Image (cartoon, rainbow, N blue to C red; front, top):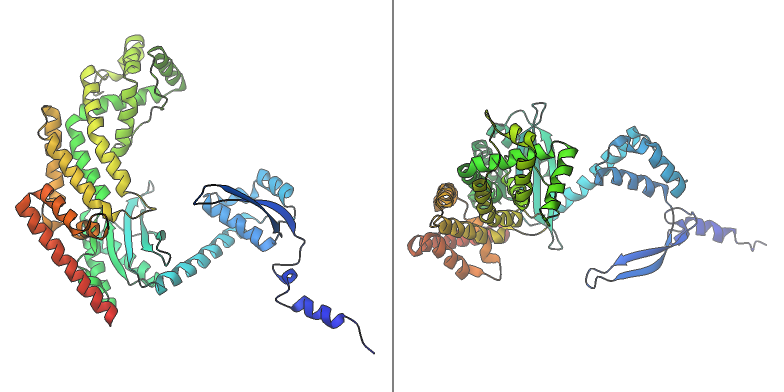
Amino acid sequence: MGSGTSTLWTHARKCEFNPHNKEGNTQTRLMINKTKDDETGQTKVDLQAVRFIPEKGKRAVAEMIIIDELPLSFVENEGFRRLMKVCQPALHIVSRTTIKKDCYELYLEQKAILKEQLKKSPLRVCLTTDTWTSLQRIDYMCLTSHYVDENWKLQKKVINFCQISSHRGHDIGKAIETCLKNWEIENVLTITVDNASSNDTAVDYLKSRLVKWNDRCILQGKWTHVRCVAHIMNLIVQDGLKELGISIDRVRAAVRWVRLSTARLKKFYEYARQEKITCEKSLCLDVPTRWNSTYLMLSVAAEYEKAFDMFAEEDYMYFRDLQGGERPGVPETSDWQNVKRLIVFLRHFYELTLRVSGTKYITSNTYLDSIYVINDVLEQCSKNEDKDLQDMAREMKLKFDKYWGDVKKFNLLVFIASVFDPRTKFLYLETSLHGMYGVDIGTKVAKCCEEALKELFNDYKRIHSA
């Protein structure tokens, strides 16, 4: 008579509800788990049963390579292998060839998840793109998508990084089109690009393609093309910097000379200590094509003005190397005065650039404020008693008017976005436009914004009522 437990054990080994059958059957270990509460900021400590799963360990190594941007050969480093042998001897460390495959499989997995999210979401996707040429003279393009997920959180995902045949608008447009087809993205609201003429051609081509794909393209792509606000600010400031170019060149040359050797830097900071300069920031050199790095360089260098002056008095090599020929010369008192005025002036633009360049929060509702502040600063400085500051502000105002002076030349979504901010609404938009353009022109621009807003509402109603 059979009365054993073999049947029960057979069932237990196969039962999917048996906790010992989940994620393998290796022994668990109790470990202290620390979590931080986002609301209170307090750290919670609790015990957690942890079981080592080889597949998860292998995946974690691939994620480490991707997140920390490590070379694939990192997994073959002796130090890393010794560390893992001590921490988890059961984890088999693979070669660089295998980890490459693991990383690619992880990419395909995440791509499929993101693709499904974008496909299911009824919300629109906003794109940004940029192109550049490498030192090897190879042209590249990066395409980034921005969208609000089902939890109402802003997401930023790089969906393509590829080589392109040229910087011609048609080639850029074709590359973006291929990427959108690959991702099955059709609900595109805007495409933000810089102000190169080739990008105008690229966006025009894409608008024609989006209209042909389906009838859900908002207003036939009327407001699809958005010019990058941060890039326009860069162009405006670059024009202004030309007015004080010689002073900037002298400070830049002085910073470069001091940073050229460790001995000079040591000597420089010794002079700063003797002059009782309390600034603890390090001298930094700018990238001339990026004005914000120029601002940071000047703001730090101005703190060390007395140290630079002492260098000019005590070190003949410093004076000799910066003087004569095509060299700009040693910064003089007038140069430092120009730089200090420029720093105060550029601080407004630097803070605004940081605000509109954010990637973890919505920035479109702040564009109106940013443009208004720029216009106000330029208006005030163009009436300043300082002749140099006047000339600089007027040059920048010309560039400002080129992009935001004529309502027919810019995308009204830049202004309309502020209406959806519950703190501002339409009255704030109208008041701001009056301050920027005057009552007559401001009222006309506000009227255009109101009509555009109604057009958008009616088109959304058409699309979602079908």
